[in-house]
Amino acid sequence: MQPVNKSIRFCLIVMSSAVITACSSLSAGNLFSHYTAQNKSVHQALQAGDYVTAQEKLPDYRAGDILDNMEKGRVNFLASTYPASKASFELSDRAVREWQDQALISVSDTATSVGALAVNDNITNYEPADYELGFLHLYLGLNYIQINSLEGALVEMRRANQVQERAKQQRESDLKSAEADLKKSGLSPNLGSVLSRYPDAGDKLKAVQNGYLLYLSALLYETQGDPNSAYVDYRRALAVAPDNRQVIDGALRVATLLGMRQDLELLTKQYGPYQPLPKGEGRVIILDERGVVKAMDDWRITIPVRDSRGDVGFYSVALPYYNNNAGQRFGALQLDGKGLVGDELVDVNLMASNQLTEQMPKILVRQVLRTVTKDRLRKETASGNDVGNALFNVFNTLTEQPDTRSWQSLPAEVYSSGATLEVGTHQLTVAGKSHEFSVREGETTLVWLSRQGSNVTIWHKQLGAIQ
Figure (cartoon, rainbow, N blue to C red):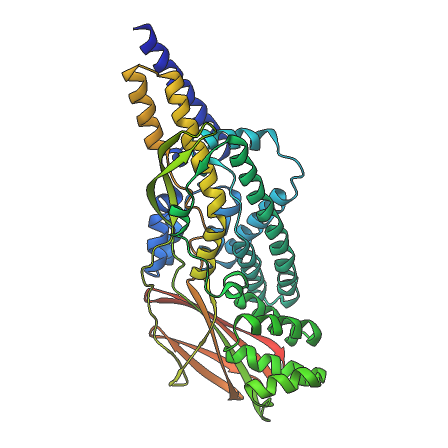
């Protein structure tokens, strides 16, 4: 009876330590579930366009200050509660800076990492994806536009590029560290059977560069009288979205203003001549967000792992992945009663999928190390003890959860469209809702909208003069 009690006591110690680790960092719920499962009600409410219910379903604390506040900021923005949105994004931004400024791993981070290796990655501090950092500053910028602070919006556009570059360097460092850990452990899993499910993005540039961010940045620079900075971002946006008419027009317009003859010759040859704004007219630029980005699902696979002695064991690991289900389709916008065709600026599902593909080797390394560690712990502690083995198996099964954390309230894709219109009041109709806006001579009106399900959030702002 003594060995049984010893095994039970040891299991209770392991479980208690894991729970304490989780509670000190995130929540104990992350031990036995994953983010997509916990966030399901919020994601479904957004897909239906029920912004108020999504607000009500948002938890106080689930994934940490970075991700929780990203979700709150975005949901509040869709629900038109802009002060709360801006405040949440600022909290997330502050948490990101604290994470990035950590020169050394703190004691709490080390404890969390050790706990995660023995339990699951969901109790580690969340590290935002590169594309998520870009969207964080984009939505901070949109919040500034909403309160008519174009200068504040431009600051966020500048910061976006700096933050994404730092994130890229950190990501590469993390991957090298994970590979070193695997080599040090003496384990050699068959990665090919897993990675085949995570194909590389076909259009790599489009998968890592945010055309939405680049275009909005260029448009703000241009309307605020900085054509040189505007042209840099128009060219970058053109590389990502070469068929987007608004990006093309912006590049032609600013190249003409700056007198860039060689560039203008190439642009004109490919896209046709620049068309100046007719007298007595103004421009309307429409940014059209559609749907909700996919949430990661989970799947389990048994893979062979060879140890340093050449012995092969078979281990079951839980991994995140994106399914291939088609997203919701949306009808054309109506501008003054006429259909308006949009051009894609960014495919957020593509960016999210590419991010997971890049991170998969690191994720798989940690999963394999964790699974092998759990199995060794079971064998050493409960050897020959049926009760101990059963307790360990139950605990391991319940806590083997994939890390499905991601910013799940982002749009699935974003399109842009535009027109030159006579001065006066005009009407945009979307999802049965009409929105009136005014056009001023020689100036640009920005209409921003986001539609999910049968609902839409829409507003407009005057940006300034462009020709």
